Image (cartoon, rainbow, N blue to C red; front, side, top):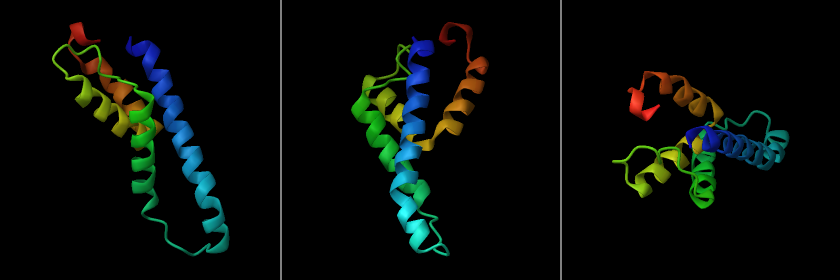
Length: 100
């Protein structure tokens, strides 16, 4: 199941990044010296909303994981971006055999 859901989560993370970049492009053009340090948090929130609304759950194969917690963690992962999802995929090899 994770193999089918993971590409969708990565796609949503990329879409999230594209949306935030598109919406901030005029601000960057108008104020090129403005420090946009807070955009990481904006991206995290927007990605979290996108992840929650989409209903994607990367943690559905863990039997003891409540559905809501799995969706919250997935939404946070999507908000964190494709790099965070890539790190999760790399660490999947460290999981015990029944969870892989």
